[in-house]
Amino acid sequence: MFNATVLVAVITAFAAIIAPVVTSVINARTSLKLKRLEILETDLNVCISDFAKHYSELTNQRGYMEPYWNFVTASYRAIAQIHDTSIQADILSLLNYFRENNGSVDESTDQKFDAIMISVSKYLSKLPR
Image (cartoon, rainbow, N blue to C red; front, side, top):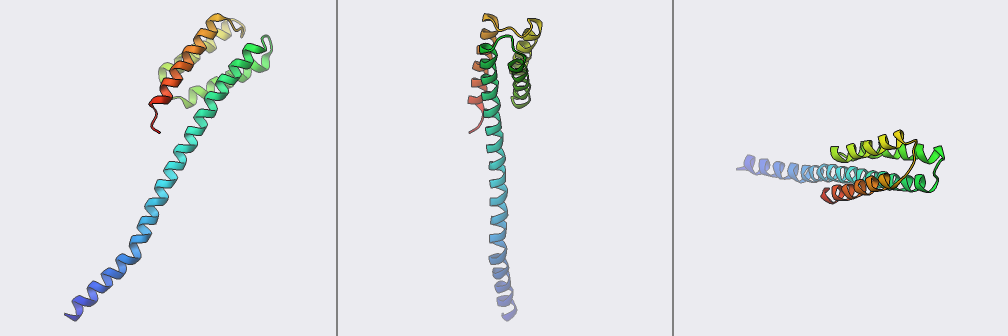
């Protein structure tokens, strides 16, 4: 009887020590995963914002190379961040159009850009929040 009581007391003490440690580890891992998702979401939002901003600059500053290269850089960042092959293909198509037309913005590029932004909006709405 004495041995069983001691054994139960040792098991209870062990559980009382281990339970908070296990809980702490689980909470830390969950917090780390949530922080990573938050960082990825922030990066994606900044990337899309830069893509739109640099297209606007390209539209307003026609003929200058810096806005063109900023837009190209933002486009490739968007391709890397957005994991939807149709959106990636649309962005590449827009870039190819710019290359073929010496970086000039016209009604066709505006329509392509608008279509890309609508697709990006739909893509973002499907992401888990």
